[in-house]
Amino acid sequence: MAFPLDRPRRLRRTEALRALVRETTLSPDDLVWPLFAVPGQRVRNAVKSMPGVFQLSVDELVAEAQVGYESGVRSCILFGVPERKDATGSEAWADDGIIPRAVRALKQKVPGLLVMTDVCMCEYTDHGHCGVLEPARVGAPGAELVVDNDLTLPLLAREAVAHARAGADVVAPSDMMDGRVAAIRRGLDQAGFSDVPILSYAAKFAGAFYGPFRDAAESAPREGAGIPRDRKGYQMDPANAREALREVALDVAEGADMVMVKPAVPYLDVVRMVRDRFEVPVAAYHVSGEYAMIKAAAQAGWIDEERVVLETLLCIRRAGADFVLTYHAREAARLLGGGRR
Ligand SMILES: [Zn+2]
Image 1 (cartoon, helix red, strand yellow):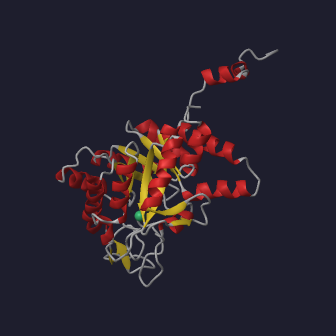
Image 2 (cartoon, helix red, strand yellow):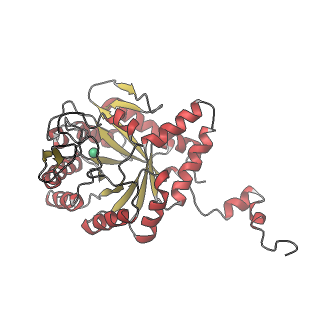
Image 3 (spheres, protein in one colour):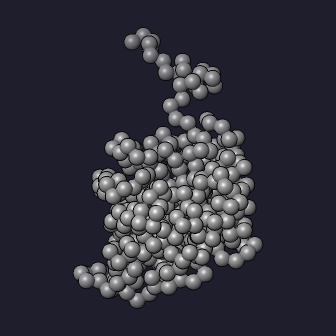
């Protein structure tokens, strides 16, 4: 051909033209802001590996959420660090536990804010696993104890009910036990919370990107005799995408209203596959390690932080995520000026 007839460049000439043909948008409405609640008052502990992220006592958390809300962040998800931890994580379902207290305070002070709660045991158990440990009945190399799936289910249901009773708008189980969505749905319905939706961490991959989070939530598995060293026994193998579809299918069949893929950027192919296969809203969790890498490169002066943040979040949306859980939420909402781009 002497000259190209089809010139995609023609549609890139001006900003108005580019805006007209843009396929994907990013808005503060697409973002969920993770917040960490800790006991005490006026507590604001910087998380060293996550610049700009703090462990907050309930009073401080309310103030932080208020500022975020005014910047346009209308949804948050809460993680809690309890006063005390024990083998079964009993603080997880206490009605006066850290999360119910935070939910009640947020609902009172920032009533327009959508409050999701993370439902898991790892922040509450003294061993740091996402469920109850029991002696292994079949061989578990390197560990005499294993997380007992079925014993954990009723505890998760109790935790979800405690959060709903405090006023949580959405409960989000992140434990990866099999059957937990059904158990939580049944628990919520029996307690009169049939209107509370479940966002399941349906495809949560075991991996190295959660390191900074475990500092923030103080939830790393403890080293000790017989305690499994990692979560590979219940979280997914990063090598598996078809298995992610199976996990999502099970959660949807059990009643998940929305499903999540976690982490986000290294797993965008999984986000796309889930988007193509299922009709429920799909979330992606841009996790602590992804956040920390952007912050570190920005602090070194190696990248333009603002542009990288917005491009990253937009690309997660383009891959098929309806919304993104991200520590950049407030900053991104501010950059977006409350509008779409
Ligand atoms: Zn967990």
